[in-house]
Image (cartoon, rainbow, N blue to C red; front, side, top):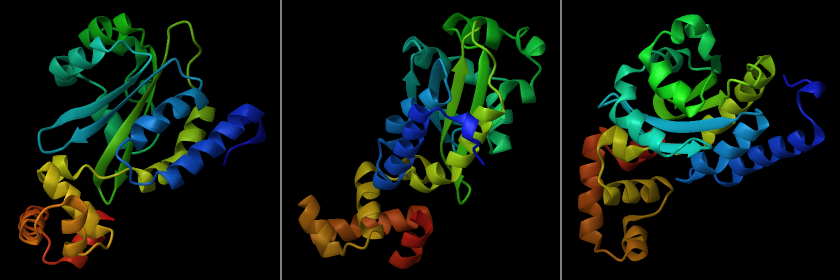
Length: 236
């Protein structure tokens, strides 16, 4: 539970705004981006990043950065995620975890990952959390403080762990990454899972009824569903 001393009045207001956004924007594609800055601010962080894990290809994708040089995205995706000694260990925790809980900071400072990636971008004190729903990766928050800032403490952990179930419930599933759906298949699956009929989807997307049925059948085959009800239950 949050203690009264954990949040200033302005931080408590921000905390309630985050909860409101998680409820009002549930399932929206840009939700992860919309709340990252507010969560990082609430945690008194200096930097933040967020990715979605692609289990099929074992890579982090769909990067979002806050106060981190955009070149870091290119460096991480092309080079450093393949030589990252901490992310897989943090991801296995499935809860808010300090970087120094899974690797001693003195040991981390001896790695090329720290000296050639983290340190040049000012990333020293780390706190990560990974979000799952029904064992499906929804994304992560990688929160950092600079070398001249104090280390994160249990306050930040408490905040993240309280927000975690709300974030897990609100973030959309990246169907294209998990099931290799085409953009159109994903669009149709989401609409059908919300209760729209094939005719409704046809009218909304201005495509033929037959096209809707073809995309839907292909999507259900990829997802491994036998009918619309089963598909909707899996998606939600």
